[in-house]
Image 1: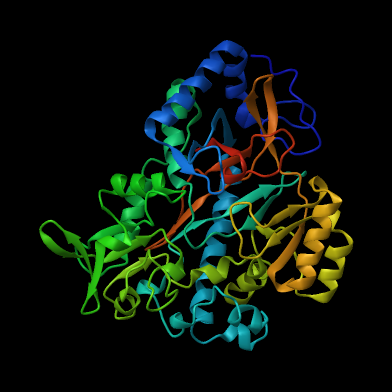
Image 2: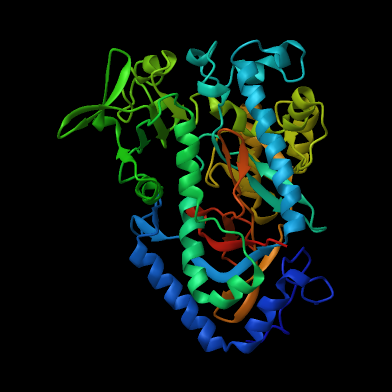
Amino acid sequence: METNKYKVGDHFDEMFGADGNCRPHYNEFLELLNKTSTKKMSQLQFAADKTQVAMGMTFNVYHDNQGVEKILHLDIVPRIIPNSEWKILEAGLKQRIQALNMFLQDIYNEQRILKDEIIPADLILNSKDYLKPCIGLTPPKGIWCHITGTDLVRDKSGAYYILEDNLRCPSGVSYMLESREIIKRAYPELFNKLGVMPVSDYPAKLLNMLQFLSDKPKPVVGVLTPGIHNSAYFEHSYLALQMGVELVSGMDLIVKDKKVYMQTTKGLKQIDVLYRRIDDTFLDPTAFNPDSMLGIPGIFEAYKAGNIAIANAPGTGVADDKAVYSYVPKIIKYYLGEEPILNNVPTYLCREEEDRNYVLENIEHLVVKETNAAGGYGMLIGPKADKEEHEKFRKLIRENPTNYIAQPTLSLSTVPTLTDEGLDGRHVDLRPYILYGKEIEVIPGALTRVALKKGSLVVNSSQGGGSKDTWVLYK
């Protein structure tokens, strides 16, 4: 397949340098590409697509008239990360998770960081994600954020930046695992030759972490799903199956004497640890949202009584608010006395008058985000939007400045991607997964999300993005 016509463009490319030369860690993949015909690559892509459908690797798109289920398109050109780069990412992510966990414990208890005015108290105390019922709580083993999916991007210089933290119910890990199985079949010899670190033991590591949260010798673990119509239902059922644990919904559970039981054909069976895949406020209609049809009445009382562990802990959502994100470098310095290993993207808080004025004047050059939105919704990409959209967001910011942040438009790095015209660069981000149990562990792989539309910077699956297998090398 021809690669000499590939154009890098005005951004960092993961495979080729600005001079057009292949980066060393991609050399062997380039050799394989040069030996493989375009027709053969198309056949490999077709086979990958068919395998995804056969595996049921689908997600639901809300507000889509084309149908409910779609596959997350998996491009067969992998993203490859050398070990020297990964070690820096690993150290930076461990540092960040440790600090965020200390922050959550603090704001629900002593509130030292608020008293010392490192973060404005009203930003936390008035946040809809700061759950008052959690005040005074310490979760089992003192861990709040058990599973995190942190989004990173690279700028034109190749420097990594943290784009956002996902500490509530981060999704996508099943696609990372299944994509690896598909791509291994496409390049079996190269995979072994390069020395790619495995990710297949993630379900075992996840189960060990969940079991660690209970003091029972053989705790019963369950995955709590909102049901088949949730966008990530494939992942919920996949992880439950891989761990060999029960997949349950709110209707399957009942609380008696501050203990949580699963209703089975043989009677009630107590659940000790719940990996919840529903939002905090839907967990218990008696403690949070009274309109919730997904939760279990009384489960929060069982949690407070220490009779069940919940991952991630209720209340973690306040730490991945996009406004709180801008303070994470200060959070790291406050709790750990260290400089951040991985930097944030520069962020303007619209709640601050000076920042707000700058955003309103320069909105056409910035990315504006709603602080509590996710999945690419509630977002404006200034350079790609028209004047009407600029004015709409100016109005929204003036009406509710606390609800918005803005960031410079990063070019995002690219990876060669198979298109109808051959290989072409498409913008990507990176979502590694971090487990916090006995220790903090970064899984040596990630979900690389790719913007499939030429020139697009929006990688979210709900907005037409796809994915790539991510190879972290031993060397």
